Amino acid sequence: MNYKALIEHGFAKRLEQLKTGLAQNMPAGHVFTQTSGNTPVATITAAVDAYLALVKATRLAELALQQARQRLLTATPAVYEMSENARTLIRGYHGAANPVLTLFGISPKKRRKLKTEDEFAAGIRRGETRKIRGTLGPKQRLKLRAPKVTVTFTADSPKKPQGEK
Image 1: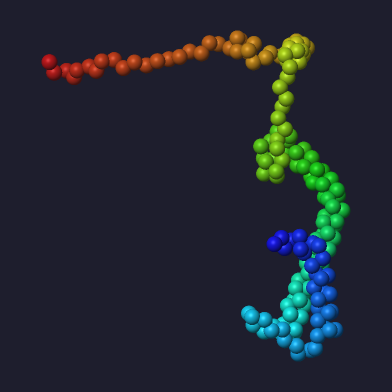
Image 2: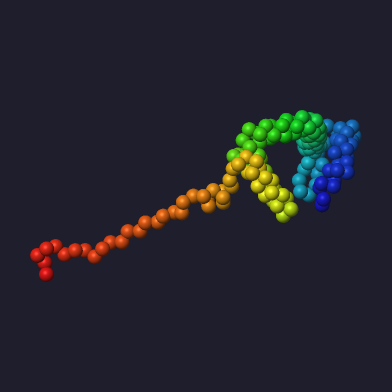
């Protein structure tokens, strides 16, 4: 039997009607006799009361959950805005590409790859800037430096001490 569907389709209301019918139409100490044993009306009423208490507690919990969700929805925009501001401040403090940002749950910004045209234009601008400032780039400076001298040492054959033949 699908008990979930039973609960959703008014089972609690049926139990309330059963409880009311037992209270109004059955004598107080009446006992139902069946092959599996005797069942007093008081036992049935107590079981129905316990179940109805669970239904009431469930409905109160659902209502509390709905209210909590509503409070959560109300609080979210302000907290989201504050967290975005904090992320911006942290990113500004540490730098947009700093790997330390991962400690705060922020992914570092990655520099975008320049298109070929943009890269060419940037090279032209760098060259013009160097002409204006009178500076050299790393490759030009390398040409001006003296070549590296490498010195290697080799061991001569060991000399024999005098007196040995």
